[in-house]
Amino acid sequence: MWLDRSGSVRFPSCMITHMGMIALLALLLGGSSLHAQHVLRGSVVDTTGADLAGVDVILVGAGRRATTDSRGRYAVIDIPAGRFEIVFRRLGYTPLVMFRSFMGDTGTTVVDVQLATEAVVLPEVETKARGPEAVPAKLRAWAERRERGEGTFFDNAFLRENEHRQLKEVLRRVIGFRRVRFTNGAGYGAATGTRTISLSRRPTPIGAPTACYMSVYLDGAMIWRSGSTSTPPDLDSFPVQQLAAIEVFTSASEMPAQFNTASTCGVLSLWTR
Image (cartoon, rainbow, N blue to C red; front, side, top):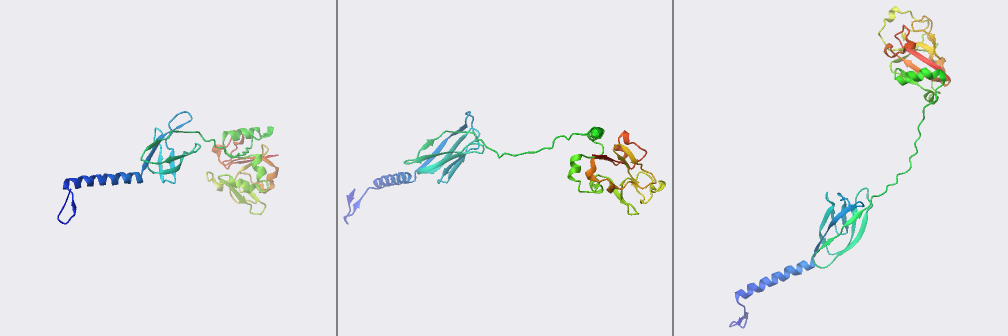
């Protein structure tokens, strides 16, 4: 160092370089202390000690978060200095909340936690189921045929729910069933849509248009045979509220032996209460 002719102080170039490096280092160190960044790491297990993956680790207010890996480990980086709320949460487990302060120089804080299974209390649900209906003695054969699954069956409970309807409306649920209105206005007959027989060779029932009319049974006894020239029974003459069960067979392939008449037009079997 020396004075030049103008009186200014001069430094050797090597000294200036050394001083610059010192100033730069001081600036960097000073900046680090002003913006200290911390790391939070650790692991999460359940009450049995098993690693818990997929746990969210959230630093509320710091805008930092992480999720545990398959070994239950996590690491939250670049945490600014301050005091923050830390939340550990995962679906099915009770959330854990704690507070930690991150002050001073950059450092690492280790926090290992354990999460307990959350007991979920579901609202009570009341269920009601209709138990098997007691079948009267005269309907035991009907119940056996229903168990075999051949034909269409309506039980007493169903008929009680639909007793405000007419029989022809209830039977509309049967696949292949047709209700045919009599030409003399005397009601409706039960028929099927089958065309496996030649209707032109069959006698036409009195007061009824040509159709494939079903044989009708009442409490196990035939009251009208398919192919008869008499008028088929009017469906509306059987009040639903007086019936306990119904079975319908619309084709010969599903017809039980006890109803195996010469008819291919099906059978309507009604059982009274």
